[in-house]
Length: 202
Image 1 (cartoon, rainbow, N blue to C red):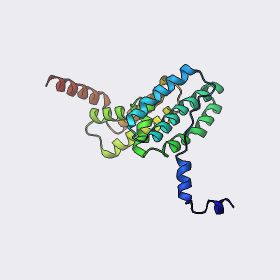
Image 2 (image 1 turned 60 degrees about the vertical axis):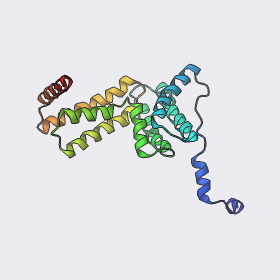
Image 3 (image 1 turned 180 degrees about the horizontal axis):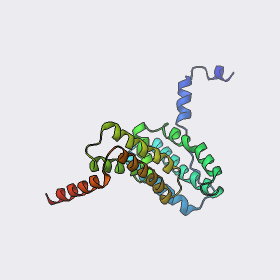
């Protein structure tokens, strides 16, 4: 009956209206100072996206802020590193990217994830490329994929220490793997530092 009533309104248009519905900020009952801090933190990430559409910009801001609120709520209700906490984090993990995808492209979503994790992925990847110029393309790809995997876990961590701990774990895995591939990391690092110093003197 409903479909008959809407008559000439295309289903696609209805989907578009639903897609661009206002994302509410989950701030009710929260400390005003905490909310202000989270919005400010999220705003810096959104500003980096340079979105022209006001509605999209506001919705993305609320999605990111709500993500901070959610992680905080889950950690408050469950013991650290508990099975219950990990299960809740996993249950909500994929919805974040899905929500962002309503307003952002893949590259922009990558930027949001990097913003939430202090840009560790691009910085660490670039450092490895510069430190070991002889890396093969498949080796570069493996390093990048591991760093992105670490980022997925870091996104769900509630503080900077926990976020960096995930990257530390994966950096160790990368270093062990590179050593098995035949790279002398100590020698590569020393040579890299020498190149940096030489560049400063030019």
